[in-house]
Amino acid sequence: MMILNRRPSLCLILLIGFLIEFNNCFSSVTVICRRRCHLINSALNAEQGPLTPSQLSYAVSTIQAGHIAVIDDFLPKSFTSKLREDASNLYSQNLFEADGLASYTTTKTFDPNVSRQVLKSASWHSIPLGDSGTRRSFGTKMHSLRTQISSPLLRPTLKTGTLNYQTDWPDIKKKHEISYTRYSVNASLGRHTDEHCEMLKKREGWVRPTRRSVSWLVYLNDDWSVSNGGELRCYERKYNVSGKVGATEEGDLQVGWLAGDKERAVFLDARGNGYGNMVRLFVEEGGRREYVTGEFPADPTLYLAGGVGVRVFFNSDVLGRAYQPLEPPKTPSDQFLKSPTLGYETVKDVLPLEGRLVMFDSVALPHEVLECYGRERWSCSGWFHEDQQEG
Image (cartoon, rainbow, N blue to C red):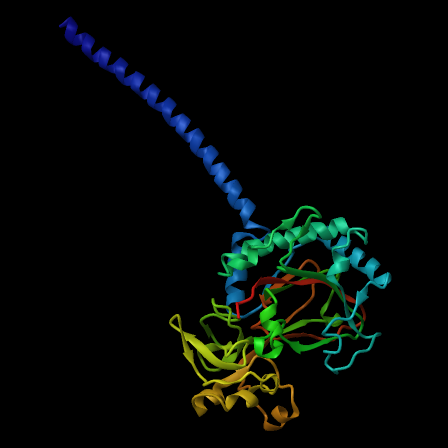
């Protein structure tokens, strides 16, 4: 009986010992897991960049739909005030100049007293000029943003540029343009898109290694109100967009839309007969391209003529009538023939509020800047580049 009484006690002791040892092992595993999770989260946070997960999801889906993404308080006022002061000081040193859009106002004329001027990249990156430390910090933040949006946007070559640690400036296989932009009182900018198809750029479109992919601006204007005007006016599509916008995975750029309840982007295949001597237009359906025109000459005049110049090459009158170019008509003939817009665009106006970030596809979204009233309008502006398709 005594032996029988001891056995439960021995079993109990063994059980307790086992539980203690198990607890110790479990605690060790827990600590290791926590450390690994911390390292993983730290790595993820390092890759996430300046946008929160919800901001990133919103920005990516909006850009992919061909619309403008607006993110408020991207920069704190303490930082925008430094950038604004730096921009103003550099402007007072006559370091700003007109760029290629200088005469692209609503009146199509350039007036040095009523103008849009920019600080060119060479001056922006010049360390001796102004508050280069603040510009460098901002440039690094935007480099982080470019890297963050690359994979979710399915544009992998956006992030292939690195930081040049010899000067601490974001690289340069020209993957990032960056500048200050100033609008004087009463200045404006006419409707345009920031990147164009090879038909318009001719052979130069094939020579450059990169192209503009995502346009962005960060506004620096303190206490801006509706009465000051200066809105960024965007011409978004009114109905749901089917498929990719801006460019295909192969790098063919968008030139227009087939308008309808389900709108489809129209892309330019500019690789016929060498550097785009002959071209065709196509849409993508289920991952494959469907040509909507035969081959026709790669003449920039046709592109500048808007819809009228290109419609005659479509495979059917129905398709021709549904085609709408991204750019507005640029010739008197197109105005005379009244190329239809059919009400498929909707206007979205964005105020240039301090610290606000906006991003959009450089090819797909036409936009303009409305006239500024009573004060100057300041921003940091730029474009993230991706690799150009090979000729």
